[in-house]
Length: 525
Image (cartoon, rainbow, N blue to C red; front, side):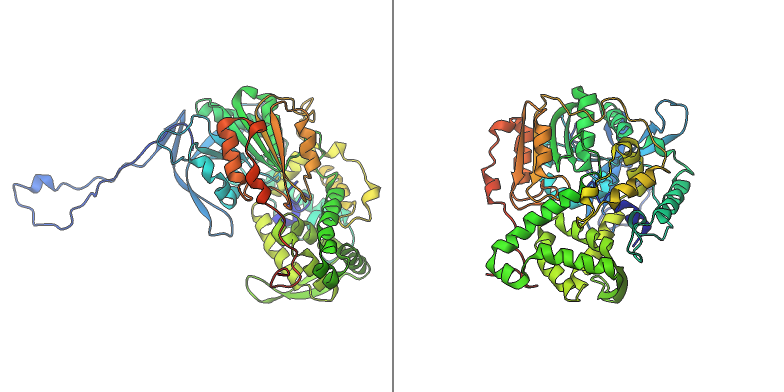
């Protein structure tokens, strides 16, 4: 597992604008050539290269670019420009960094003047790298509006704080051991800090800094109002921006809602346990599933106890290369894998089958899929930026939760955060940072019924401070639902009309859980 992915797994993801322009190119050469005569020689002068295409928006000059997702064939055509900002805003004459800004052009002849802005999750994901995976959800929006993507400072191509070179597992939890290794985490964190500090000051890669960057981008684009779409951690960025710069906000969409009051990392264990119980209850209620697997929740904990007592090396086929690979399997590796499966309804439907197979000695279904998931996660997350956010904004508020010690995720993650943040530099957390958002801006809150990291009760909490808002909970879904069913059309309708309380959401009633798999061919007929 790449060390970038290992460090990222401490959090495991807490989870084009203003004008339309057309370019016409005429064929610069004839279909065939005749020998030039004296009378025509003057007409066959060397052809000058076509001028480079640009798009001027506000003070920014954008050029064509392509947004690709790491380890994926998915890419998106866009227009890009660097945005220069001071690293330390209290010292504008100090080091400056370049932010990666991209605009996706609407297909409309005259797009609306208020662009959509996607704020990526993590913390640690880059908007330009995350977008191709959710592009379909934004397709209806692009019919009317341009879409703005900015890699938050410390991620993607915005002066990323990339860690690398360490050999330990997630947050000091070594794949070869069966316990939390504080010494290993300290070594790993210090190595990461030493690397990123060569050309960055980690104190200035926080949510507060990102909000100032977003406002600079808005001014550079001509000061339009934004329609903010925050995803997971991006909902924190959206709420904080709306509190600091309400004049820059036209609407809010919060998908996978993290309340401002939330201390990132503190409720991971209890949220996962609640989601697993609810998911496994579906199997218990289904006769075929229950007859095949019995009590999946109990089987999972029996497997955890067995691995706690006897962590060991296992072999399975790599799902990409089909080669036999060996991994050390222990209770922490199991918890990480199960948590990743719980994020989406497709993989959650496989959990009873995969856990049962692992309990009977076949770890391939569980670890093979996990290898795909951790590869995607590690390649789109920047561990150093995660530390900068959490250590500055949350770590001092984390409290031990011994009541979580016997859950599948346990209580070691809070210890891991505290250990890492005892080494990582802390930025400034403004007064009132964790205060709930109070706003009359039109807002649409989205949750999945079985979300293992930002459960629906979080959306209910944020809704209390919003006077012109609505909270939609999608049945049977997990973390992030903007692309599920007809939700893209619902979101587009909301942003167009700004009437959340009268929004027609009847089509969402057709969205539901994926039937639990009782075999690798699927569910029962």
